[in-house]
Length: 184
Image (cartoon, rainbow, N blue to C red; front, side, top):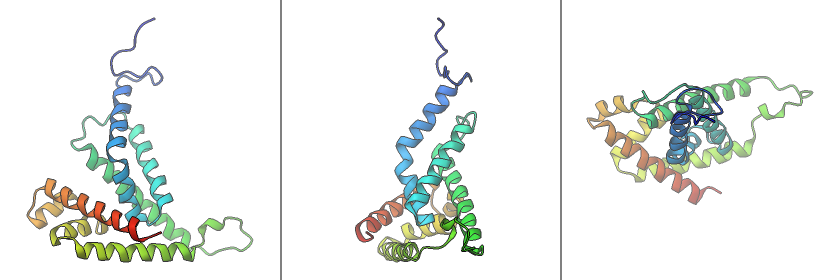
């Protein structure tokens, strides 16, 4: 029996599929926790963050190849940002839809406890951002809240993209730690 070529996936049949899946696995192992934290900060829901993160990896796996991507991590987070925005839009549409009491689709109604929890988390994040150095806090706000690209932030703050990523990553980690410590 012939051995498949290096990088081929016997189950997929596409040349390089094994290498592609390995790239996605490596991205998952290296960035999954940060990705979920990023999505949680945008969506204010652990379940939604996990769901959107899963969608991100499905999208990546659906692509033929990502070896041409300059920064796979940035690409991963850009997909996540776009999907989280789509998710928030859908959530807003569902929240604006009138509720039919005879309808069994109860998940479209707002749950006050979720709003209270999200508000509490937001307060913790605001306090955490005040505790961080100004550059770190500003980079985080510009990227995560305003949705600006790292390159735009780098130009605006007169920093390298790498430093912007460093500041945003530190702010995300700090905010996540504070939320985990203070919010049940």
